[in-house]
Image (cartoon, rainbow, N blue to C red; front, side):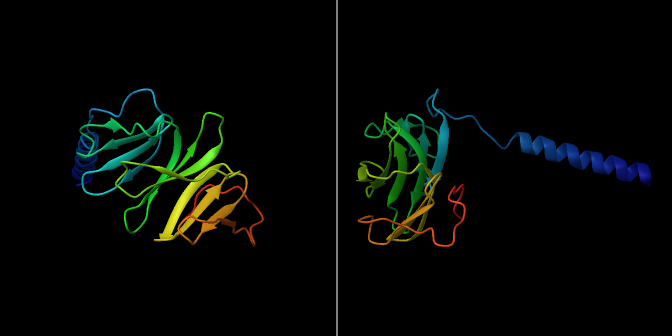
Length: 166
């Protein structure tokens, strides 16, 4: 009986390993060389990837990829609100952070703030018009007026290096 249980357990482990190895499939991209920093599933077929060379988009679940030519900068994080507006944190050639917004499924992107003096670490979109940005060195920023103004919300935080917003 003991041998039967050991053989059964071994067969179960082997079958899990075989199934796990078949889970991932190689696709046609994205393009080589860029480091992937974040990804976002927009809907049932559209995927966005934020990379060190900009934003790359697939409209067929990752079978084919295209660069969004308007965004060729370093993209750290991607997020989406409840009405499918897209947001991205980026850095320019001088390593200055800024924030991007797209209201047309990622076709065009608008800079919505060039004056952040913080290194972004995460984005949290809580409602249609409330966005919270985490930073490596300045704590948290919040906008509640469709990105027109931003305030720091660090009351009660002793440590301002934000790694992740949950």
